[in-house]
Image (cartoon, rainbow, N blue to C red):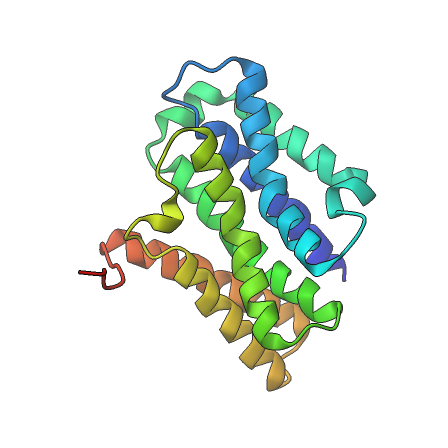
Length: 200
């Protein structure tokens, strides 16, 4: 349980950075940037918990998640020019975030007694909805609706986690392996410009 908790905090932290960095080319004040980071960090997990009927929401019931969010926002403010100047920084933090949130969303759904099929969908939902809200707030086409392999990478990682869990792989190892798979699929897809077929 300790590894899962650490990964949840880490995922919340990196998504807060991702959301705050999303406004780097826009004229937002500090509150606007911080609010975007905050909503990005809590969005997917909160909507997942509401759908699953899991109360209180994680960040409401555990103040450490708020500290992780505020820490991510503060780090971004302090090193904004440096982070914004790195072309791939936003991509890196967003990719880490979806990796963490996918598998942790699956794990939480299973712990609440839901079937694996539902857990896989909730894992994907946890990962992508924070980004959808972030993109909507910054007036971008949500990455979910672009040609990039994004939600499908999350779903693939969720299915792999469930399969490894079925075959009895030790839980902490499974967490790390499955998170790494989501991150790897996303990085390879972007590097080689891979995408799913489009409707024509």
